[in-house]
Structures are given as C-alpha cells and as structure tokens.
Image 1 (cartoon, rainbow over the protein chains, first blue to last red):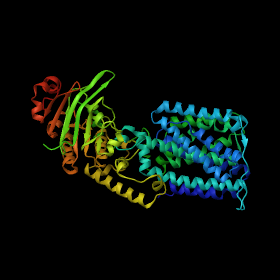
Image 2: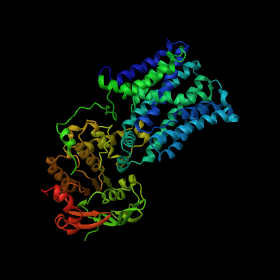
Image 3: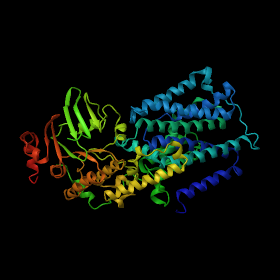
Image 4: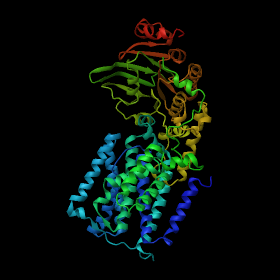
Length: 337
Length: 263
C-alpha cells in the first residue's frame, strides 16, 4: 500500500481529529465539529446520489427532521438527549423510507422535483406548525451533559461526533464494497439490467433512501445539540445545495470522497464568513469549476495522480479512457446488417 | 415429446391499439438453442420483454419449468432462473469486469445489511465464493486478462460477451439473448458460435436468441421461429425455415438474401 494511499491518509486525518481538541480554541472546535456533522451528511447523501444514482433533494429536510425530532422530543416530552437523539435519527430514517415509495416510480428530474417539493413542505411545517415547532423563531434545546464523564459539553459532543463518524464511515465503506453496494451501483448504471439479474429495485432504492435518512438524522441530532438551538433556516434549500456541492467536490460514488468534500467545503465557507457575499460567489465558482473541469471531484484527481486511492465500484473515469484493445476501433465501426 | 422448459401460450400485446404480438405460442425444450428471427417490427424484442416480465401481456401465459411467470416482477422472474441480455450494452459502466460478474450472483447470495456493513465472517466467506465464481466465468469466456478493467473501457463486442457471462453466473435455466452478435467483427463469429454451443453443452443452459446475422442463426440454432407483424409465420429447423415460402416472402427473399449472398 502506497505511503500516501487512501488508508494512510484517512488514518492520519483520524489521528489529527482525535488530538485536535487539545490545541483548538472554542471557535475552531466548533468548526471541527461542524465538519464531522457534514461528513455524516455527505456520506449518507453520496450513498443515495453517488452510488444509487437517485437525484433526490430531500437530504436537508431529513437533516432538519433529525434535528427537530431530537430537540422536540426533549422539549415537549422531557426525554433525555440519549433517548431523543437515536429516536430523532430513527424518525428521519422512517421518513427516508417513506419518500422512497413514490420515488420508485420517478426518476431523474421528476424525482428531483418531487423530493424538492417534499423538502419545501417540511420547511413549511417547521415554519407554520407553531404549536409544535415554535415557528420561524425556532427553539432552544435543553443543555446536554456528559456526566459522569469529566468533560465539558463541546469536547464531549466533539468526541461523540468523531466516534459516530468513525463508526458510520467504516460501516458505509464496508457496505459499498459488498453485494449491497454492487446492487446500488447496478441500479444507478442500468436499472433494467439490475432487475434482470434479480435485483429488486424497490428494495434497494428504499434501502438507499433509508440509509441516507439515517445518516442525516444522526447528523441533525448532533447539530441541534451542538447549537443548542433549532430553527427552520438551517435546513432550507441552501443547506441542500451545500450538501450536494460537498459530494460533487469530494467525488460522487466515493465514501472517502464524501469526507474530503465535506471537510474542504466547511473549511472554505468558514474562512469566507468574514467577507459579506464572498461565500455565495466563491461557492458558486467552486461548484461550476468542479462540474466543468473535475467532474470526478477531488477523489477522481487523487485516483489519477496518487497511488493507493483506487476504490471498488468507482473505476470509471470520465471521458478519457485509452483504447485498450486493438480491435476496438474496427469493431465499433461494424454496423449491423 | 418431452415437456417444454419454457412454454408460451397465446401471448397478445398491444400498445395503444397497435397489436404487437397476436396470440403467439412458443415451446422451447431443455438444452435447445432457439432462434427468433423476423423483419424489423415483427415483435421479437417485445416477445423477450414479455417473457422476462418487462411488459405485461394483455392475454396469455408464460411458464418456466412449469411455473407461471406472467405478471411477476422482472427481478422475481430472474430469481426463478431466467436470464437475459439486451439489444444495447447494459454493462455497469462504473464497475470493473470482475465486479460486473459478481453482481450477476446477487440473487444467489444472502449477506444482509448487518453482515455486510460489519464485515462478518459469513459475509467474507460468501464474498470469496462470489469472487471465485466470477473468475471461473471470466475463464469460461476467455477474458481473464480483463478482470480489473472498468466496464466502460471494453469494446462493444467485449461488453456484450461479459454481459452474457454476467447472466450465466447466476445459473439460469433459460437465457434470452437480444442480438448478441451486434458489435462482433465477422471473424469473431465462429468463436461466438462455439461459445453459444459451450453455454448449452457445458452449462446446460437453454438459449433463445434474436439475431439478424443469419449465418449465426443457421449455424447454431436447433430450431428457428419466424415472427412477422406479431404473428408466428414459420417454425422448424434452420433448413426447413430457410426454404419456407412464407419466410422467403416475408423476410429472406426481399431483404437479407440480397445483402447476404453468402448465407
């Protein structure tokens, strides 16, 4: 395995993430925790969009449902965070599974539009069902404590996020290499051939939606706890665009790429926070630049240039494949009688 | 007469009032290579789509090994032992050749969400067996050297052959091939003949193929069914069909004879 291969770089990043709180101030710890949360969101979204090829726009809504679920269960029912958090994630998973049912009959732009409509509907509920969601102003969640562990809340939450990221990263990485990951990619590359090989489209589309809902729900719960506050604008269309941009910048159909995309974009967005308007402009430029010049994302670049970044189920590089067989040209000229 | 492995009875399909298939019967025996030919628009591909469950017929029944498969989902029919390939390449382009073949074993493997994501031993053993089967399939089609190439890097003809192997790996009883020789150069056709016969003889798979390359049909098929405008106009051995006046009238005489003086 090459020195700067995927495994070594990921391990180095993990070690760095584990020791980072020792020398980060409160603000940078917040940024680091935000990165971890977006890593979860990107991995889940990448499984749905990058691997399974379902162009869905409901991830921000499921992120919101996780955050609202976790927060509201604590506020309204007095549940402790440790119960509300997994429940919020399960609610988001259930919603993800539910929206996959109409999604089976839709594809491409129609799927995009219908999931977008669902996301806007979720926004509307967050804004207008004031008796439950507290409307546009949002609500404060109860402070959480890591007692009996002797650590403060920001540190505790950071390490909780890191452990979850590590666990869910490994699970996702294993999953996408398995027969289930192959079924996802089969559905993406040719649904008709996938079916003819005995792959049940409904089952695997639902599974991908459910997994992305689960990852988004976990991220939402962590996000609400980190901010101690939940309000509708955190889960709007711009949120969805940020998440989509992360998987495009990182690389579609790559778990490691999700990590790289989330990390670099959160970093850039935070660095530009001081200059008004710069976020949107730079953000747009990055997105257009990647789509035009690096459609494979950061991970595509690394796979081309650095040894040890090859991944299963992600071999196709876009557009510049060498002719591998001398007969290729002759055969492709062949026309059927 | 032995019972047919695949038995089609009175299949009728119409799309928006246009009759595409009109009460078609078809019986294919175990171990047979059946050719399905006919002019463009005869309904050949629709026929395969009905058998594999992509189109639901307005009437009629399809039985695979005695089990009625009409009205089931394509994936369920595939699990009952029916494989198929398509007119255009449907290779999974983001996967390597090896991964494509491993996907063909999907319905024969069991690992679930938990076993796969936790990398449990049961899953790893199954995965190894899957890899082994995929390697054997690659050897069978003589493409071992291509194992780690991306699907998108193969020539069109190679893609089609990998697709056939991807179907075979799931050990189907019957495989439907929709114009498998498209994209093969003429000097590869003899090799392809041999491959089809080996599939039948070594794998015990029954084949139904739509083909426009008449030489291939005449060389390799045991029986040929000729469709024209949604009806079966002739059936029999290649020689019988070749000399059938209705066939010559509808098909060979006017079109293909002229273009294929050799056949």
